[in-house]
Image 1 (cartoon, rainbow, N blue to C red):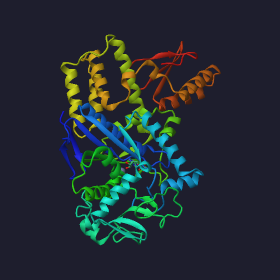
Image 2: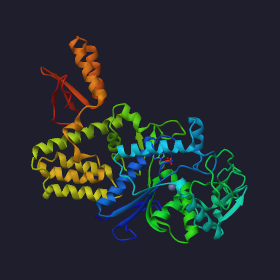
Image 3: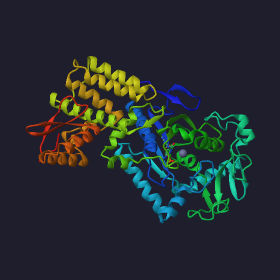
Image 4: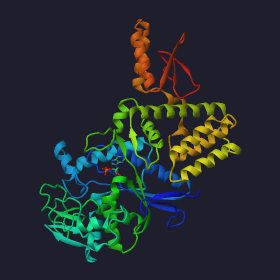
Length: 483
Ligand code: AMP
Ligand code: ZN
């Protein structure tokens, strides 16, 4: 399988060739742990997980490194504002360390619920201050820095390739087109490597450094930690698209000025999840968390399926209608797997003929810059093909699920059990019907339908089926609400 990836550096599709045969070093910018991740953030991690699983599907052994930003990320990405975690700690009445620990745990809970594979290394910024100081020293020794107002800045005018990733206009850079509030900077595009308390009197996390007691700028942690765990030249760096113009641009400037050579070969960026017309963002207040979806009765994997429905480089607008459709498809898929198992009691059978052709199509589309919508279509076409034996369908779909990772290998009847809220609605409807309250019974039927669950009344009780399923109905009684 020849993998083609769209490299933000150079803006073109190119064949992926790792530095060391069979191995991939992958760095993904992790969360800033000052609040719950929103589902926009989580879309980016799902994309990275799909990418990692595609690499593994291709036979690579992946060393996946992710940082946790627990210091230094200001409310503005370009050094303005105050530290996000310090702000949260004041608002929550907790220490910065408590805030970071609480939201780190919450993040990895969501990450796991979405079946994102744990990175090989998770590294916290605050555990790597000496590495950051060493790297800043190297940058300083090569003459790329200056001090002003007590802070140490990176001087972009000394780094001719500055802005290459983001295709920043060289004239704008020279003129300093960005509006800047930090008077210490010579050019607004310069950025802080080390802050001292001269800027942040209230910062609780402070370390001694050659430049005074203070704390690191946000970007330096990713340069220092990626080099520590992946070496000074590695294969892939990913993140959300918003990181292109500032964070990743500055990471490149720092890393390459220190080493004098290329740092990363491939840059992959995931597009935004939108709410209405705007990017989902905590600062704008237009965000949803994964737990808020779960509270509404969705399974976390409904959101994973929803993400698979759009290419990672296209914007995806979040709507509950879209999530409902994803849920219906996912439940229908689970149901099909259970059904295939029943039809092929001998289990998965090695694919041949048409089944193999579907698998090849899927592989071609996955290798074409991770085209998951096409891959999903390949899977559904296979499932609908009456000529392919059930055992072969099973083996091919389970193989595809090595990338989708919707947990299909463990799709059992239990996974089709209704969630608690739907169960309660079903029970309420049973009682409403018994009491002759057909108006309420109809309302509940409509509410369940919106959740992808269809009800039929039969002499044995309420029959339930998932909307996308063709078969698989089972009688639901007051004792037995499994379907
Ligand atoms: P943060 O925790 O703010 O550092 O963001 C974590 C990741 O989520 C970064 O890679 C961001 O680029 C990404 N991100 C932020 N907002 C969105 C969004 N609306 N859609 C997709 N990714 C996002
Ligand atoms: Zn980063």
